[in-house]
Structures are given as structure tokens and as C-alpha cells.
Length: 145
Image 1 (cartoon, one colour):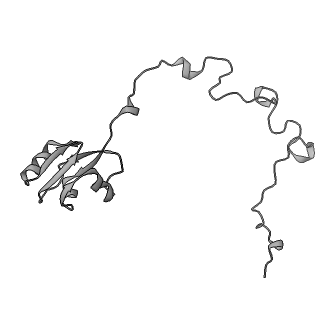
Image 2: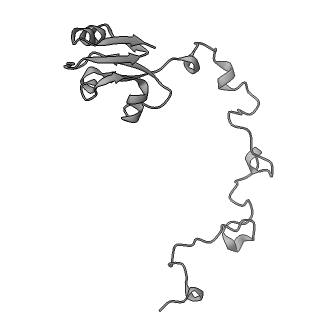
Image 3: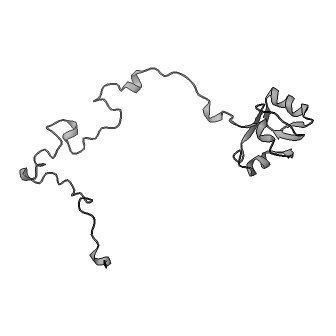
């Protein structure tokens, strides 16, 4: 039976710390694995990322271009007509969230993939042309939020 006081790590699982600058016998004395001279051999030799020794950095040499409006892009969660066949009555964003088909507080777009065989009242933010026609053809109603 092992006691807590007798527990030891597996052999080879613990690695000794690299002891730098402790003489030639250690194998890491002298320059302490930093090489000879130069900025990186010094005590405070860490230059910031992208620093090129005083030369104009690449990121500043190249021209700026392009524009993105990504933070303000409206992304729609997509629901197809084939999925709506599993529902009945009124289809709202809350119903779709309960079914875990979409995430909460997202805009919804209904697409026309598949056939609709039920009369549904569908409420969503956007509809494709085909989806709108299919819902109305089945006797349902489309409500844009």
C-alpha cells in the first residue's frame, strides 16, 4: 500500500532546470547559450516584435490598402423549408431557438431548399423569393420582422 508521503514522480517525467553561467563544467558557462556579442547577447537584448535593427520595418514600408466593414456586417442564421416541415402553426425566432436550430438574438433568413407541405405562419427577418412563394403556395403567411 502506498502512502501519500511515499509518492514520487515517474522517472524521467521531471526535467532539471537549465543552470546557466555556472562555469565551464556545466556545459553552459561562458556565454550562457547566448552566443558572442550582439544585441541578443546583452542583458536587455529583447527587441520588440517586428523590430529590424533600426531599419524601417516591413509593415511600415508596405502601403496600406483595403477597407473592411466586418464589425457591422449583418449575419443571418439560415433555416430551410425542409426544416420547417417538422413544425406546425406559427414559426417564430423563439420557436427556432427552442429547437436549437439557431442561436439566441440572431437574425433569420428562410431559404427555399426542400418542399413545404404544411400551412405555416412564418416570422423571420428575411426570405428568399422561392421560400416566400412556397410558403404562400402551401397556404401559409410570411411576416417580415
